[in-house]
Image 1 (cartoon, rainbow, N blue to C red):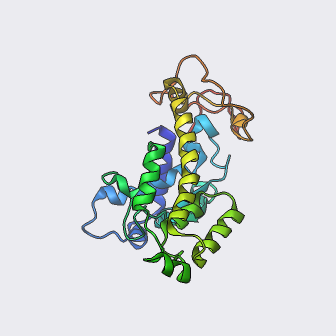
Image 2 (cartoon, one colour; image 1 turned 90 degrees about the vertical axis):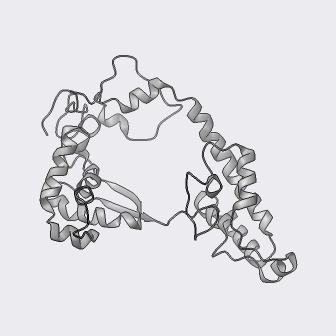
Image 3 (cartoon, helix red, strand yellow; image 1 turned 180 degrees about the vertical axis):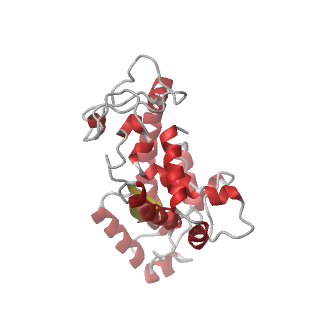
Length: 271
């Protein structure tokens, strides 16, 4: 953990009393000190000066937008309360829906149960087999009943996953109408999901295979970045890793991004 990150943790912790933390998170006499002390750790990255090599030392160099599920909301409501008191902007939240397990809303994805999810390491055949065999269906018991009653969009996992992954809203609407009216069968909507997921995962695997140790070293390096170059659209393929010494967190956590608001020339800065 770099020094500026830890300093922000301490500042946030001083802004929240135990009574407030108990009211927010439901702590009791049985809660261990690790649980009680964790919220500032989750809150601190909402402030850019936790990462001076990326964003400089100005706590207001950037605003923070946090995509999260509703279970994380208490942490960042606490963060919003503390932000003005430590000199930062209040972070904003985009709260998303929970992503259901492949076997249905009643279960959960688990690394110990490969059939509960589609992994980014799965082959096209594994994706097809998992969806066809395990994706919970909202279809009726017989084709005749399905044609008459239609599929249940409220429980069908293929339909729910398509809502997350399919970019074409018009195509998605057509699928929903066809399935719920009985025109499309359960096997057919599963095929739509397979066709949606497979190229996405294959593309990810291709990109992942191109990542080298040099890319990883550069990503985790605390060598000062150029602040302005981190924003805007990337044109063409990603640049190759820059050769040279990789700077680690050991003794270099105070290096400051070049051109960052408030001043930044790549040298050591204050917390």
